[in-house]
Image (cartoon, rainbow, N blue to C red):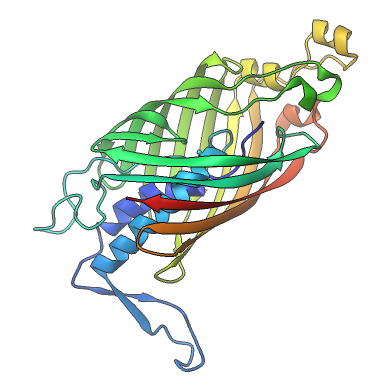
Length: 333
């Protein structure tokens, strides 16, 4: 099983929690839903308080489910991104005098989001065979501490509204069974890694970068990821999150995941191959979230991932570019 996709989900929570504290409760903000009666103009208005609540709920619903899909690729996360993270977890001021941190959806607001969904994707990136798998969703925040699929279990001690820095222990979901790969030549298990990440928010965009060192299971390699996303508020209930991202890995990871050693070549008949260090995939994706109620969110995401560099020439790669899709339902307490 190889999880793909979406960094939009993690980026959207972090971006929104910091953006929302910049909305004054006394101000009104347009939500554009043009219609014939209005002559194509934006007629709906949300207060700063309503906008903060809308942003907070919708983005957590997106993040919590999408982060699992992101955890094994650039989203996430990613989708997805399971980037997944709660980056905005500690701040000192809201940006407006007299408004405390954490009020009405600010960056210091604690929450618990759970849910479930389904993901359709290749068995691993490069496989011809697709598979459907159920996915859980979890996004918990208590002060500076977080639990999610993108950044794992950890703490983000720095968050000034523009920069967020944190670290955690995260599951790595990139794996495959012998039955998934040509000639059953190898098996890669899921693992765990130490992860550090930094996020920068400017001009309505969010750029995130992270490094994960796998220390148990998996390939024991080092993976670096980068993503760029922008949340789009279509209405008070509908959100979109386009995102792009890429990943780099050291030789240990690429060689063990996509390489074929001399012994494996002799046993399987596959040609010997060592891709070495370098960029190994890139993705583009679009996430959608619809707020059904004040607590329930319904979402979907779709995107495409393509292999890069020497990895794409591996003998276990049957498709260099592959789409993926997912849907999910979440509940925020």
